[in-house]
Image 1 (tube, helix red, strand yellow):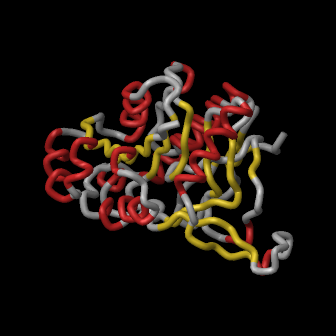
Image 2 (tube, rainbow, N blue to C red):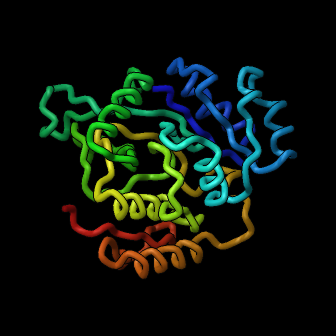
Length: 261
C-alpha cells in the first residue's frame, strides 16, 4: 500500500516549508509520497524557488479555489489510491497519552508528537479496507482533556486540515462548497457509506481562519459565506445536521451533526 500525502497550497510558499513539510520530514516520510498542488503556473514558479529540490517533481498545477482543487485531486489520482490530504500550515501531529495508564482520568491525559506517522497511516488503511470505510479523520481540537483512546465509525465531524480517503470517482462525492467543505465531505461520505472513521486519540495543531494565504486571500466575507454554507448543508442534509443556535466567538456559524447512531 503506497499512500500519497497531498498538500493543496496557495500563497504559502514559505509557510509550507516551516510547517507541514517540516513535520513530514521529521516523521521521515519519503518525498516520493508527497504531492503539492498549486493554483497556477505563476504559483508553481514561486514554490519551485522556495521548496527543496526533492519536492519539485511533485509540485502540480491544479485549480484555484479549495473545492475546485479538492475535486481536481480526486480525478488526478486513480480509484483505490489511499490519499491523505493535509493543510499546508500544520505545525504538529499529536497522539494522546495518559500518564497513569487510565484514559478515563482526564487530568492525566497529555499530547505527545505522533511516534510513527507512517505506521499509523498503514494501519489506518488496513482498518478502512477491513471495515469498508472510505473516509478517515482525526480529533478536531488539540485538547487532550476531551479526547479518548479509541476510534469511532458513526457520524462525527472529519476536520479539513488532516484527513484521508480510499479514492473513488463518484459524482455523488463532489465538493461544491469552499466554506465548510469539510462538513460537506463528512456528510457526503456518511450518506454514501453509513460510516466514517475518526481517531479520537490523534489530533493536529493548525491555525483556523488566521494564517495568511490560502482562503484568507479571497476578497469575500468568510463569516457571511460561513452562514450561507451552513444553511445550505442543513437544507441538503436535514436528517444529519442542524445549525448551532449561537455563532462562535469569531462570528462563524457552526453546523452540529445530529446524535450518533
